[in-house]
Each structure stands twice: as C-alpha cells, then as structure tokens.
Length: 287
Image (tube, rainbow, N blue to C red; front, side):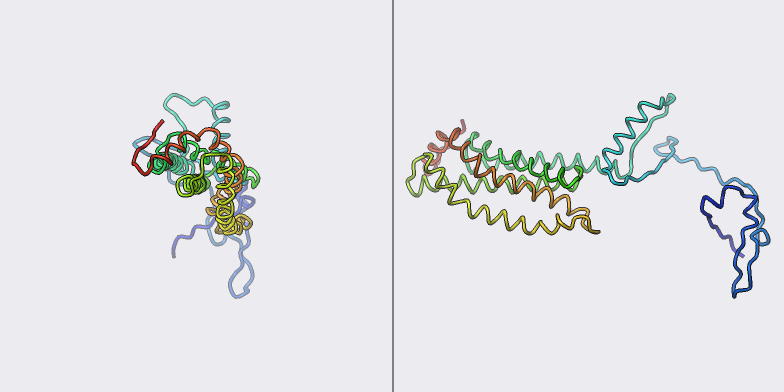
C-alpha cells in the first residue's frame, strides 16, 4: 500500500459528507463502487507552514495578467491597495516575481542606453569636432523614437524590456543615416570644391537619398514578417523589437531628408565650412 493524493474539482468539494457516495469505476468493467467503501472520509487539517524571507514572515499571493501589460496591472493593484487597505504596524507589501525582474532589467537597460548615447557623442566628436554638428546628428534620436512609440500604440503594445532593446538598436541606425548624409556634405566641400550653400545641401541630400532608402527598405522588409506574424507563438520577444525598429525607420528616414538638411543648413554653416577648411591641417573647432 502507498499514499495517494488526488484533488477533485471545486464543485465536488463543497460537502465532504457527499464525497462518500462518489462512485468509482472498477477495472475490467466490473461495475462501480462507492468511495466510502474504499476510504475513510472526514475533515482534517494539513501541516502548518510559516514562510520566511530574510528572517521575516511572509505570505505569498500569486496572480497572472491577461490582455494587459504587467507594469500597468501592478500599478492598478498598488493604487487599489493604497486606497482600500491600512496595514498594521510592521506589515508591508512587496511586488516580486516577473515584475521585480522586469524592473531590474529596465534599470539595467536605462544605464546601457545612457552609456550608448555618451559613446555615440564621443565617437561623433572624434569624427566631427563640433558640438553643433554632433547635436544635430543626435537629433535623429527623438525623430526615430517618435516612430517607435507610434508603432507600439498602433499595434496596441506596451513598453516592455524587449521594446526598450529595440529603441537602443534604433538609435544606432538613425544616427548612422545622419552620419552618411553629413559625411557626403563634407566630401562635396573638400573633394569637389563645393561651397557651403543651399544648392550643395540639396545635391548632397539627393545623392544620398537612394542609398539610405535602399538600406531602410532592406531592413524594413526583413522586419516586416516579424511584425505581421507577431501574435504567433515563439515571437513574443522579437515582435516588440521589430515593431519599434520598423516604426522608427519610417519616421527617421523621412525626417532625415525633410527636416535635418534644413537644420544643418540653418545652424551648421560656419562650423561645416571651418571643418572642411581646417581638417587636413589637424585643427579642431569645438564651439
């Protein structure tokens, strides 16, 4: 003989007195027998369990979310508990599990994002030793992030750790397009003798339009299947990443040729002319 633990559905556990009349099939089609003929049925108590963490007693309440993001669900729980429950002295509530892991990952990604921006600033300062030009190149970040946020809103997604990773990747792509454009401006000024003028800006933008569009279209076509099939199993991580990058590519590419050339023409004329003139001599200008 050995102990056997079974658990009935809730409907069958409302009255333990009736459990004895529960009929059980016998093997080899030999009919049925009532449960009380096989076992003694009665109320009882299980072993008491006192959970502790860090030498403090704790009680764990588990729940899952459905059709909404974890962060907003926890915020609503916090709001309702704060308004309806007054905890006795010495009692407190902590939110752990997936929410705790998500918060920790979000903080890590925020630090990495800041390091990425600082790294991009340093590299750009080496390439273009002008604060004005570097800041205008970094201006591609908000235009790209706007597209990523709009893509999340359109697809009814929330801001998750995966989407934050997509924003970091998107920032590098957006700044790269700006570097290609500005580098070509300097090429026209240094190698072909163009003056810094509106005509040079238009020419350089048109000559870089096809390469940048081809790069963006290639990346977009590769991400499109992930976005269209994002609800399929196994794509929970790639779906928000692809959505953010695809949306950001659209807005950053358009702004790169509709807005940024005008900003460069309006605010960077003096610095661009000086850099093109003094680059070969090794002089640097940091206004």
